[in-house]
Length: 119
Length: 113
Image (cartoon, rainbow over all chains, first blue to last red; front, side, top):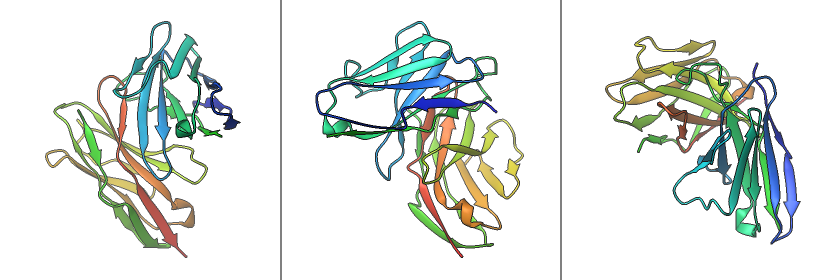
């Protein structure tokens, strides 16, 4: 089945530094990827939609200068948390859809997530 | 905007018994898809079952089945013959055109041996 690889699985960084999270579709091409954030014991909240070759679309309330998204190829999207602060500590999950399948009935494939801790 | 509501924060079930998780949603769309995802402690999102809104027949995947009531905008999940490995968070999700998945708040399922 379709696999989405997300790296790193865990990262600890100091306040003020930037962290990059990668999301790769391993056996399919994805023109669109999605980035979610999940706080402890809460649901997944969509942060942004990553579009290959164009700017990402951010959900209301998500700072685009804080969470930089780059989707430079059909298999890779990156989320960079810039100038991270403790309140950015969370679980981040990416998902992708196989572009060769109908957008209406193909499921999204999820990465294993990244646990970010900002000290 | 579409909303998905899961009214049960936690459900407990005895091993081998049946549990039903509720989900309601709000939409003005006529064509959409509904999903149930399982999230075990590993945090991996696992697709359990999905339902196309245009299909009247309820989806079934082994021990998992749904009761889809389009007019009532209800999409419940039934887990039959519950197993210890079913213990997890379960999220109901909605998707219309545009691929965006909207998740409900989740229901934690506890399975008692």
